[in-house]
Image (cartoon, protein in one colour):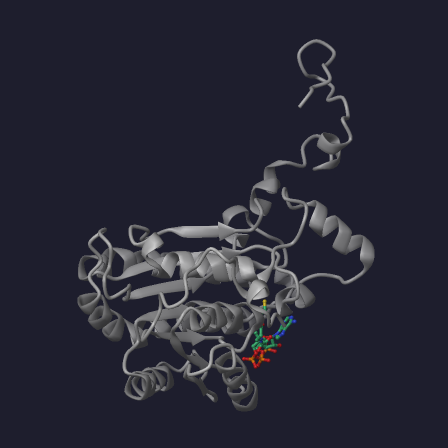
Length: 315
Ligand code: COA
């Protein structure tokens, strides 16, 4: 778990940009979301994190609060994002105890690898309910507060003297861009998540709220990478090589994307899916005709069939 400031966010951000602002985050005890929240808290904000497991959520809230003396981080456990009423109550408590909800992250997700032949209707529904309905419920619970915040902290494109507010981010995936075996349930759910985000950008943009998606690729040290991949050395090496940048991402790189979208730097970004995956999803089109990506590029292999007999390219 990243703990030092350098592991949590880049040095380009200024302290205090989220001073007196409040972030509401579902799935906040997970690796990626907890680092998104930690970055927000380090930069001056307070937060509520929500989770199903009471002990894990409260422990994480305490830990995040230790990132900045004087910060307030509320851990609200026993909240399942499938339960709209529980989320609405949690949002009410968050706004009452911390003063507002200026930002939200719909981060709670469920995932496992399963082929359709072994995926029951209930298994499919479970992931749809956690990811898609859970994101919708998170938006419904927080939007009234986000609209209030957007009214107070006007998004004019000019410098925002009281800082930013009224922004929501959905954590998604790229599986539905290309299709992905063993992920029919998640691909369907994340496609829905993206469209919920984009509908909000249209319906709440006129009220000053921005709604965007962050799509992490393979991020090192996360539960997802442990759950969704074999852990032998050859598989891990191949997985890293399949990313154009040749490595997995760091959680800090997702926190940076979050700070960008929540800060004044992201004021005109609305209805966008920010893919932070090192270019991985595009590789779907790169394994062509037996030439294995990226070996044929790095090894200087001659590509047959290029012009007459092929030429060795020089970079
Ligand atoms: N393969 C196939 N089906 C599976 C499965 C797997 N690995 N894991 C669960 N299911 C099925 C169950 O069998 C059940 O279907 P059934 O009633 O037809 O048997 C259905 O999914 C619901 O399972 P259940 O365990 O009751 O759901 P839950 O709400 O307690 O848990 C999960 C939700 C399944 C998504 C669980 O993995 C979870 O809690 N995940 C949270 C953490 C997480 O996934 N993070 C994402 C990191 S990328």
